[in-house]
Image (cartoon, rainbow over all chains, first blue to last red; front, side):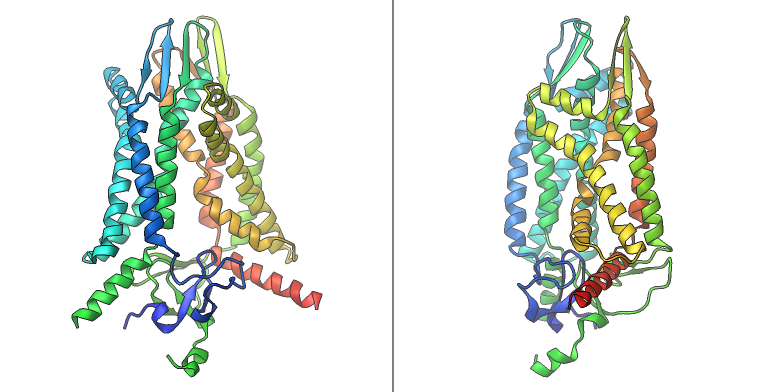
Length: 208
Length: 218
């Protein structure tokens, strides 16, 4: 019989994974000093809030320019999408795909993925629980890679300073984009996957 | 549950999956074997051979590589007699000069401060654990390391360098510097460190050492 630790009165430390009795909830873990909780407190509320904030940031991140590339005094501020199009115009299909995936597709997929996971817990969509776990691990792992474009702006702005010949400066869109990436990373961290299994067990018990 | 039940269950005898909360009986994991949760397949324990020694060695190697990676230019650009070179820090400063203060702080943290701090914490932790030397702040160091883990982004910085090189091919001649080779080495050692670190062994040792300090104080 597969049973959750919580139903046997055991909880585990979020930080060092040491098991403890449920009656110690709210006290500090005797190994690492982290406060013990059966589940991340207010996990769903925090995750929703961070997700809404990151979705809101995604608009300015994509609409505002993130850098200005001037060569021989000419050049306009470009958004992420314009950067991808410029790469395509220069026949750099693969690198355009990498930037498109990291900067536009992945942030969107992360938000959609987390919304599905949140709804899984709230609406009880607990079919394919294993698929949902895979989805969570993917969202958590891929999160950092969206910082790619920020680093590209930083590197180009540092190296392309050749006076009138060519220069790069960063623009405000970069701040919005970085904020969106950080917020989705925090959202993935504050989501407690154990809630999916709690719901799954609760529903399968109700069935039998 | 009755009070008696509560006392019968000894938490130390169990593993609890941190991702799906499945309760499992604890068992010994032989060296170099991993235990996975039968329900959600997340890793419960990954036992590594000589984890502490290897972590220490890799972290020291990483620290040695950290300095050339940050002090020497990573890329240099030449065009019509003008040249400009980039280190990780100048890329932080360039964002600052573009008035993107928050983003430059973020790049400073994720590409310089966090990777350095992670290496220092690992050297401190693994040398204390290796020498069985009770030291202050051990659990704090381990906790900070775990929390910082996903905020070090050197490998993504590396991908950024590749994208930048390709973007610049048309504009001017780009040459890699010593910094780039050191950075590659640093990224490889950092990735190897995270595969060699046996979290459970580290936490168990920290607990033993701290218990010993407590007993000595009595």
